[in-house]
Length: 275
Image (cartoon, rainbow, N blue to C red):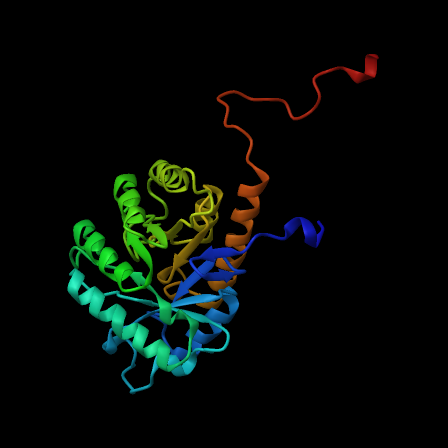
């Protein structure tokens, strides 16, 4: 297959453009060294980092940012661990301050998480909408973690979200995309009259097939963390996620055949031997 055939448009997120459509997190790794290897293997251009201070430094006092190539990666600061809009906005501001000081281009955006409770880690839709409106008003490009509810997704876009990121299933659950029909409706609503609007599945994927499936639905990218960091072999899984993202994207672009109830013969039905 020619390189030209496999070439693709960039993933555009606000004012940023990227080659890779896989965004990976930096949490839960056994060591920062392993994290660094997995980031490399994933071929991601964007990596997301929890800004809350207790998550930036490990038990030995080492800062996670010392293990990230800030010249290579665009950091997407996230508000993981925030349970109300005020904390999320405050954390986003802190992320902007940190990345501005590091001269990383990720200083102008945020992955917004406003969680409803600690048991499900599902988003609080009202607080998420309020935080989105506030951050947009402050000039942030806001990538919003939300449920797969199409109405909420549409309201977040109307509030100015740079990207809406519906969950495939609860964070870290590894259940995959539980409701692909809802994701399809989210795609339909968010891309109506705006086909380039980026929709990214965020959270819940557990295996490479989940990533490929999300991309085959027409999503523009996938964001994940635990599926790599929690795998038996994180480095091998990082490779798998990289290839699954590409395979799913190619499959979507190529176009799948329709599903049918009954068989259709693969071989020609005409009897050429008797012609």
